[in-house]
Length: 433
Image 1 (cartoon, rainbow, N blue to C red):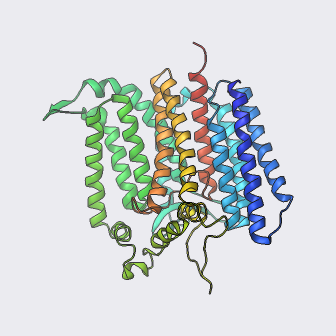
Image 2 (cartoon, rainbow, N blue to C red):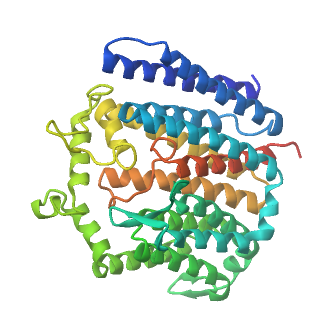
Image 3 (cartoon, rainbow, N blue to C red):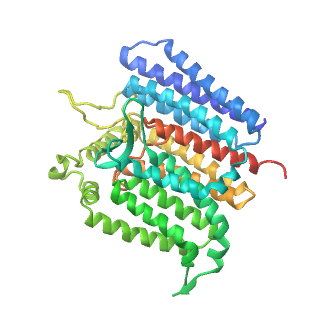
């Protein structure tokens, strides 16, 4: 079976998941089946087949498993959001269609994606500028103490960090491709550890400062971890020097410790993470109510879950039991309804996609392509880690979306562009020499 036929076959589980999921929602709500579930499944399959035909024509040698894995995640996300709020699910479906259009546009515009290297400084300046937008008066807005989004009244709302992560990866891939030899060969050895030369390592230090600055100015722990973790992954692949990563982790630990103990709003997040059941913190305006209830919801799911549609999201007398279930807390809803096994299946799907991304990096024939695939895959993986880690109390909770499952237009559009870039790298890597 050819690669493209395997991709086409892989789209069937996604459409079946949509059909079965919506059927489950209708049964739970009205105790009756509806033909609408079949309609939704057919529409989703039609969109995916259209994207598959486009990939078959433009990228015939691209990885055959990436797009089906994304389709499964997106279909599952639509069903979960519909179960929470049908209106938001329809909006998410519209964003998915727009994302597929930009997915196709990215492939058409950047068939030779290596041209992006020429504009690396422009790209990084635009990316940093986008990160500052949420703090501008009039358009920026805060949610739960963090400045994450930009609101243009009557037009749209988006999170600039979703777009910036792609721009920063492109810049770092290009810069490290040019300086990797100097970074490996230069520097001084102190106590058996090779330190990188400061001149060439300067931009990397700037990115470290950017991560710390995001944490201070935007109170966005998730984006800081995502950007900095992606940088360290690319730096290790470019230089094969573990000492650089150790130095980077020590610098990050010192930075996070200082900010977590000296910046009030960051310290408050750390306290709610460490003591979610403290009654004083539980009832605070930005307290641990959300974190604690997420823990209870996941515990209620057990191994096999309470059943689809049975998670308690609201209080009997009115009010919210689990805040933001369609965004920050959607993983807690998944675990509550489908149990540990259902949540593990979701995480395994993410891991399979990340593994295909890293395999693309191994197959790439030039340094820029390798670093680009590593950076995009690492950013994607870290985004999943940040939100799942926050919900499960591995790290402090932040407002990063769970890719393709959480509600959010900017997230699904940006991640489809990310997938398009990975498929471009994959297609080039698999061409005959």
